Length: 192
Figure (tube, rainbow, N blue to C red):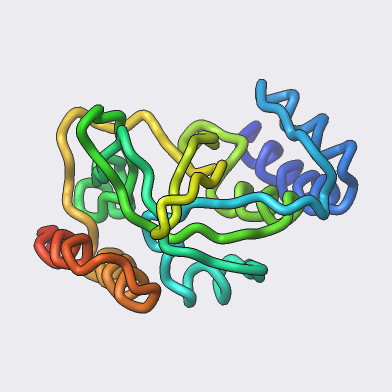
């Protein structure tokens, strides 16, 4: 019963908080997160998973980036160590700290209000992904302060679904990520 009540409140509360910035700040604060800046202020979001694909990012999530760039983060590696649906057969992308690692993706410039809307679509605030602010760099080597998502994953990696890894591969190709990264993604084994 309480689960249904919480879902109902969430369906009402979230749309209101997206329109009223002080309520959004209060919502984030209740989860132990901060929401800095003004709603129209630009921020950079680093996408490394399905959000690299325009169909996922623009069409399904409704994002309208002002600009995008090829980018990478260092000190992390790409993992597929989260439980997806169906459990054990569709592991979503994640990143994990790895001092010698790097992850390539797409840097999108969006407003803070869009970031909050994107967060909601990814279950933030919540129990899974959490925002992680870090220094990325674009393909020209320029530093870009950006936000991405990270979650506490399983010890062992699973396999992404064919549909999911295809979105990631297609997004990487469409945005011109380096050939070695596209090749790496091509060799990620998918679930049957």
